[in-house]
Amino acid sequence: MGRLSQRDYNDNWFSRGLVIFAFLILLFAAGAVAVVVANYNHMGNLFKVISLVGARYLEPVKTTTLVDGAIRGLVDSLDDPYSVYLDSDMLSKILQEQIKGTIDGLGILVGMKDGYLVVVRSYTGTPARKAGIVEGDIITKIGDRDTKNMDLETAVGLIKGPVNTNVKLTVKRAGVFDERVFEITRGKINVPTAEGYLLPQTKTGYISIAQFTEGTPQEVKNILERLKKQDMNGLILDLRDNPGGELRSTVKVAEYFVPKGPVVYIDYRFGKDETYSVEGHNLKMPIVVLVNKMSASAAEILAGAIKDRKAGFLIGEKTFGKGVVQEIFTLGDGAGVKLTTARYLTPSKHDIDKKGIVPDLYIEHSSKLVGKDTQLQKAVEILEEMLKEAA
Image 1: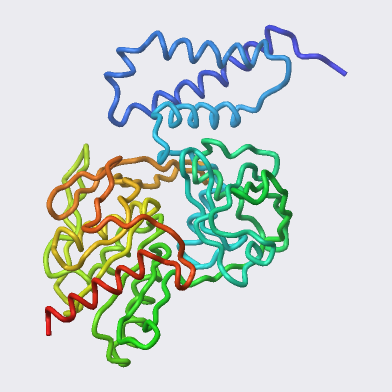
Image 2 (image 1 turned 45 degrees about the vertical axis):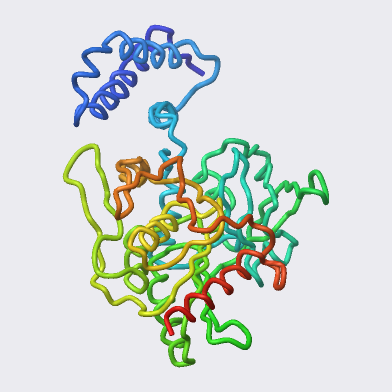
């Protein structure tokens, strides 16, 4: 078997390095040429490291691996938990879910809290719930990967996968067990994002929105039509543990709860700012909104609009404080990058990023179990007072 000479090997990697270097230059060319010129030495060092890896590293490395690593490093250097490089598999999953409205996975909704991956919801009848995963569980590992400070997109991408494949979750449950491994078979998940009904022996409507997807506005519309036929006279809107979702869907939902006018302002660093407004087809009845420290992003947009426009009364805890907007940009080879491109402001121009929304009445979260949900109990009391005042 012939062996490539060191010189030939170096020349080969020199050519590859030039391609990668040119690619990296193009990444900046759209709006950061001055940055590249000012940091010429740093770019030169990057080029040199790429060539050294190819020429001297012990094991062979694919050029695509280096390019992916370079892009991922660029995004990671932003130190922004919401900006992330999406490989082709992960981007494909995200786009397919937006189109299909279904998920191949376990049937849990997760969020990040203090750097830990926490189960926000475990839906009834899903593989996760059947296996014993419950709300509040901390997922410390997915397979053999530690989830501490893992970005949410990566975590969700690892949990999801083809139907009938298995995934191992290492779970910690406070006060019950330190760690336990659950091996769960993925399934096709089609869980509604909203549910609603009249509270027992009342005409008080209750709607809970788990997250905002393309189908959420129609779900909420259907629930409201049904509750109106049952002579609903007031509404409790539950946005607790809602991690957010799609901006446009949130604005469509706001149409049912916010008077005519602005819902949210989008403040871009580059380009023209945007205002999202509604036409005023909102409910003409008292509304109480429940929020907690896991109500985030799009949920905060809706809660903030209802509070600022004085369309309802907020009860619960200060919200999470995610007041920034992300966009997904597609790259070559099916990959993409999700970047924070703007911040949003409430109708009163409040920037709530890392600050959250303070409710009108603070009630510490206890339990959502029937009869023990102190926040919901208080919401019922407040709504009854509002109905008496309106009579």
